[in-house]
Length: 466
Image 1 (cartoon, helix red, strand yellow):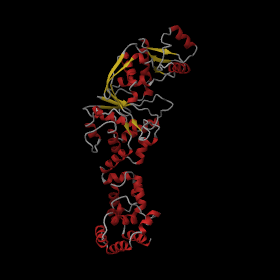
Image 2 (image 1 turned 120 degrees about the horizontal axis):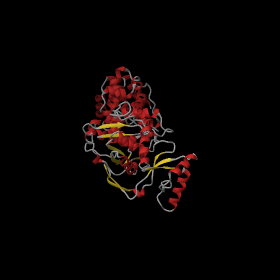
Image 3 (image 1 turned 135 degrees about the horizontal axis):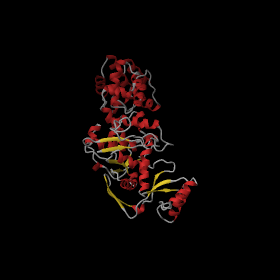
Image 4 (image 1 turned 135 degrees about the vertical axis):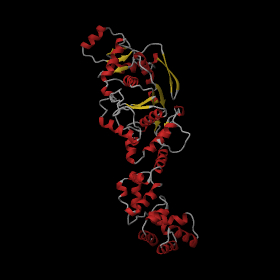
């Protein structure tokens, strides 16, 4: 089995197309000797760039989706950038022309627009009417003499049914009469997606293709091209698209907030995206966090859903926290970054990491807690001050007395509970507010342990004097 991911480097890869990469990777890894191929479809010269190509490769490697064949891993079927395969495509253009299965088309863009408008006004589906299907050699020569630009179109056979079994959607069939003659080569000489995508899959030995359901109607065209050339047809599977959480619109490259680059810079871990995306439109019996190998072993095309997969930020955040829990202290410190760790006194770094592990999802949140716990002063907002003013003086006096004795957190809170008959929120909330200015956050015992006695005393006195 050989699967592939064939992105266009026209923008940063987003969750939609990186999920496609992940599923093709998992499918290849789910069988013995499966191969995962990367091909760069950069025929759109005006929008593609080498910098974006390098970025998407970097993003894939960061996610753990290393390719067995493709850029940097030659497999004897390259080049793996479509912009370098023009001579290969030219051979197959000519083969289709020689067999009469393709023809030159001189219809201008304006002519095609008018043709579509006329068909739509008549309640007909817009498709090419075959104006240039029967041009003679003399007519073609005359148009060439006049300098008219031309495209190359595939001659779709009449009264045929194109059938295939989709890995996700099951049996599919399309009538050739409902598919107009489509373009294989644009007037600027570049290959159309239908053509080069199909040719490359066949020549590179791709056996299985998982892609978005927006490509479903491309499949009969590509099957006709490959059959006409006597090339092998892959097994296709068309997955539901990821749609936005609020608007239900499919995610796209232009949604910068959903790009892998942006998520990576925010601090998301590869394992979080792997586990989230593997379950987005696909199910697993095991609900627990898994590494790529385990995700591959349990992957099956039979577990794809049919309805749209809705982006859920809460679920992504859940898997981020699960991924963080798998990190060692050294890895967690590396994830936080040197800039965060250097703000912490060396004697307190181990305690600082333990305090943060279950309370932050991103490095930026560590910075918030550093400002609260690692600075000499603490700013309390008006609501917090109002709440603290209502606390009875005996509460603060008891805490200060225990501080003077050098009592640990457990002893101090037990004394508060016994002497003032406090429990629950009434016992812990005033202390948490006095020490952090917040009611949420890390375990209070760990905060108490991290702060030095002088800082504890200063903050308790400040609360008492309100």
